[in-house]
Length: 268
Image 1: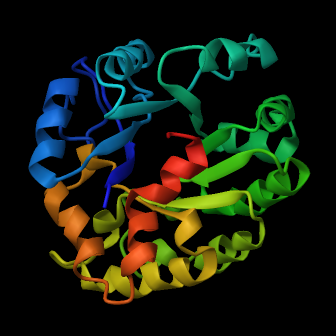
Image 2 (image 1 turned 90 degrees about the vertical axis):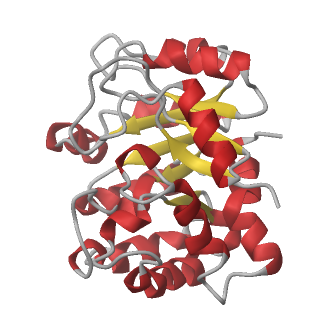
């Protein structure tokens, strides 16, 4: 079984938000940690807090194309337009895009239609786009998915606030699970240990994960870590899924642990 982490951040600079405590997180450090945990590949979402992270992502993919692929980002300012999408996709290892739209002013742009040019560009190119969004904006994401069916959306961290604990962390799950009716929406089960109230194997998250699995299926639920903010080992994040969920076995386990995200983003 090939294990692919659906979301990590690589960066070489010293700056990082406090909750990403493994800082910096370099190519060499990630490779060492992945080898120790038995993780074969990782999807790198370049750190938004490091202005050089996109260039660093290109270097990671060039040096280790069998280990790292990238969902890149560019500033969604007044200069951003359709031409940036092709420029970005032409970079080595770049398989799609990922944007952090959790700040209220950015999230408002989802609902206002201000970013429709971006969704249209992704739809025409049939590429994956990852989104970190706030729960109140999930219905707007569903509307985008309906209007642009060729774009493959990925919702980061099950739309869970990185600082939230269960049961509050899953208060929005009725909305999240309802989005499964859109075949072009998938979810990253990343950062799951952070919402647990107890230690490994994070037992209070298991029922939540089963709900997501039942709604989205193995083809649209992607295991991952967001490892730089977790306070458990990468190995524990792996075995939470591979050993502690008795209902996740066989082909379904292979899909959730890597095959499905590779198919979704076109990482052969």
